[in-house]
Length: 102
Image (cartoon, rainbow, N blue to C red; front, side, top):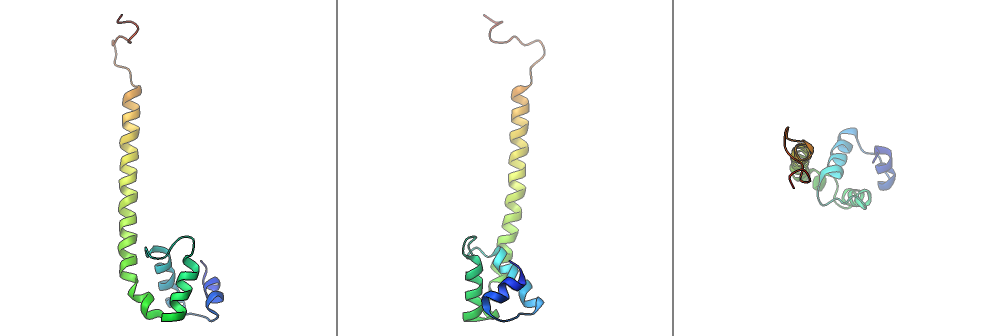
């Protein structure tokens, strides 16, 4: 979400520093959904102000860290799966195929 889009939702302007915090929480906090996140973060701001959003930063940071760990793990799984596929397709020199061994 862009700063001007958020400001339109709340009907006022926010500082760049405030918006940086808002965007971070909007992006990473697990309670902010992908489908309704824009209105959720706007509602939080309008009803509770920056205090609640600032209190959400710590959990958002934990979520960002876990997301990074998950991406590393997914790359490792993909690497191992690719090695398994390559090994499965590799032929052992001199090995008879199932048809030849009959």
